[in-house]
Image (tube, rainbow, N blue to C red; front, side, top):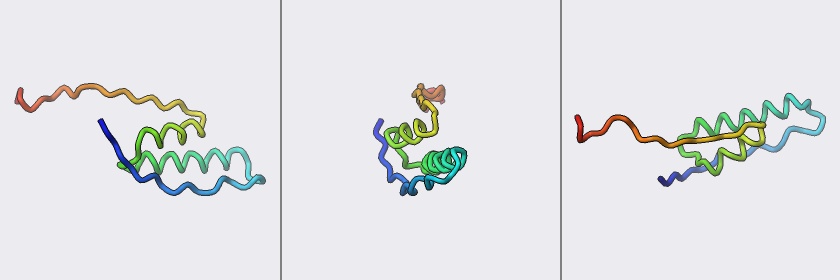
Length: 70
């Protein structure tokens, strides 16, 4: 499977004076926007998730519905 995407523009990191929670919030917003973008690739999502302290795991499974059985 091949996926292509245009990653949303990354905003500049939170200022040094911003609280750790504000910086995390900014990173979560960036991840959320990328997840909502149907053209984001796994290669783009993994580092965004990692920056939030998340381990993104994606599993591809066969769909139970097959047109030839209908």
